[in-house]
Image (tube, rainbow, N blue to C red; front, side, top):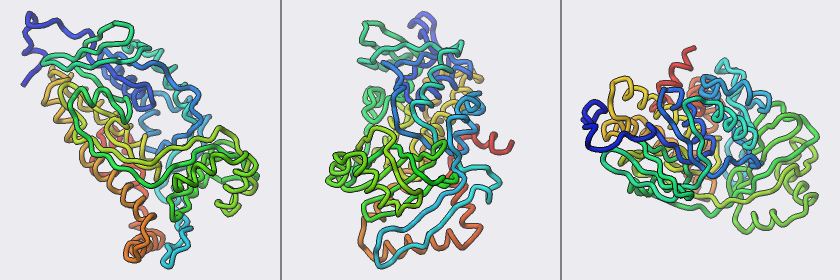
Length: 413
């Protein structure tokens, strides 16, 4: 076992940092703050923080608990809208359709399943917190190369600087430089879908209800924002997405209101519109060669059920637990043994959640009657069988299998 105590001090210089986190999205900044709080000398590296991102993130309750533990939620909460109810409506128009189902957070003795917040607000709060963290340095630069070695990793920046660390955390997205440097392969796939994403104002109050229409081309989801506003994810064919993107604001608002069956009254476009192709990715491993992956560097899937960032924050929580344990035992935090522990902690959660979202999305696209029947039966049972419904709600917030120890401790409070 390669531990700090075992390392020959004459063989190589001690790394400048314990951890370098690459990527300043929400997962990366949260990871940097958490690891600094764990007593690790931490550097965060990214060109800049995106404070203009008009998209939103639904933070489920377990993620809220993590941010609260870090002292960040008190600043996020005033800018977020509660998701107290989750409403699923089958709008496929097919022969076999599922009944409407509403999940209520109060059934789990929760005020809300989670909270929806603008990415630019979340990013701004995280950047401010990172800047105040005494054990954390933020280097605003682009990473050109990551070179793992036996006892440390070298990180070469575009300004000519070179950082060294015992461990590098890749929070640098689906085209991760860290993942490539570690030699980690990925499995990728794509869908015949694109997502139109924007924010809306509407005449009727949303009453803290997140509504997801299941359509033949994918979900059409309205998620509450503060006031009489909601964020929209409209998944359609690539051709339809491009047509909608080209509409005038008035024409687009009218078309989206029609698709929403006017449940929130008249719509008005309240942000720039963005279109994203839908695809999936899962890394064959989340750790190798003194590199650990979190967030979209490790897994990408369609925007269904608010799972993306929440899965990434579970990566962060598990990594924090593993590294704290290694530090307390005097072990090398970048050793193969430490990385194997992180791999073991994350594998089940990532695999099951990615598979579940993929199957749900594909079930909307198929015309096969047996698949429609199974999906409809499952939603019928969820709506009628209380114990099953509560299990599904708990699993949607945080899976029991592979739940980070930090989340388990918070849940018992």
